[in-house]
Image (cartoon, rainbow, N blue to C red; front, side, top):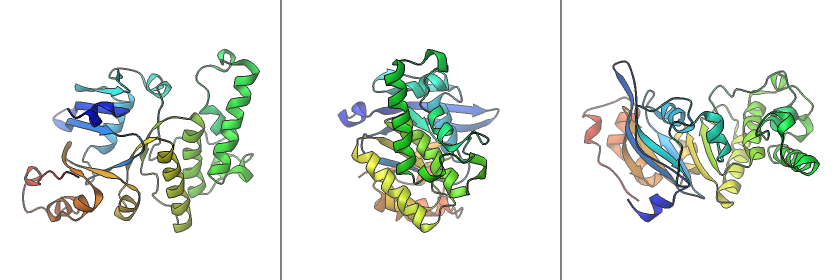
Length: 263
């Protein structure tokens, strides 16, 4: 294993998960370097979201292991993984729809039940400041008192990201975060991600819009049938005709025939 892979804030080795006779994730090894965006690309059903669920503890792995800054996280509950600085978004957003925008963001800063919050008044003030900064960064400050259910779709997307920002996590797992965004919102989203990587945040995103992938990612891991079959720089991966055939469902050869690409 390379030193760079060993030093990555989050890495997994041989993660696997089956559902009955279907092997959704089949021995995936992946490292997320600090200060980079790694995109997971592949056809529908390739195992991308299942991999996120294995890392975050939403699903239990049949085999393999994952580490956050060298600490084993396999078998931990989702809230335990989150406390180690891993934040994620979901395709269905999972917001508290009848709570205000501000309260949705504040909820992401709560590490335990409210009456056990550490830090007293100073800690509470720090959490409130983090929430307000996240709302400002995502353009939601003027909507802080609105209910999440009353937001437009793009605004809900940014609320999901504001929760991650306020949690001050240094590992982000984003599941289709740019889907449904208009061009201006996509530009703001890209700026937020670049600002985060500039602070050393390790980001992994699942995204079907290949223009977004090309614009934002530093590296791509291409998944097919539960396996990483290629990994490398965006230019090499996105221009590989064998991988394009797999992605668009025009297979003329088995997925395992796709050559691994390195940066």
